[in-house]
Image 1 (cartoon, helix red, strand yellow):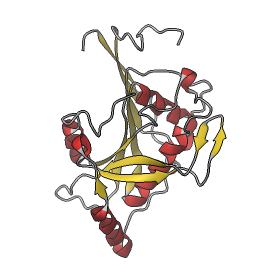
Image 2 (cartoon, rainbow, N blue to C red):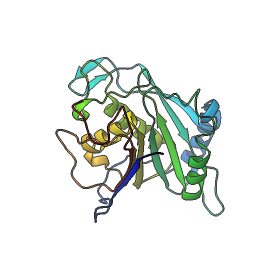
Image 3 (tube, rainbow, N blue to C red):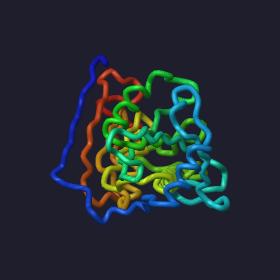
Length: 241
């Protein structure tokens, strides 16, 4: 891209072993039940045709707070689990890449070819890939990475999605990554601040670097960021928005 700057931040740190993710690494009957469930799950369409499609519910009833609102309205979760590579069993722990698309980008109808490289990487590195979509294709993260009151609580949505994925397959809590583009990248950073107990191993951000206020993160996170200097929506040199 014209005028693109790449920033790489790799702090001298490792993911703490106390990181929590309610992983369910299946064995025996539990393992077979999981595979039967996945085989009957619906598949996505277009660029998500290699993903399982689920609906998750973030809460049992409508409840609103400063972080947004949770309800029992279904939210989408698309999950790709790579085919078994030679010598790798599905009971082995997979890494997880959480992919958060930009505003107004619907992977159900756009970008049929966008996922080929990503899924090739997932198979090579033994990564599951989870895709979330904001309400009306917009995540609730705004100035200072805060939420608008009365809009969906997308931190709670992401947390529920991570727990749902870990209940469906065996996830290595030390290898959970967040990749976000524009509005999706800002949600990655908000999650890093709002879910410090579920710290990411690393993040990759595209046209989305912001600083959360307040910052509730408890440790540095390795980060690679790409941002075009000609970006007219998210100016490289900043703005008052």
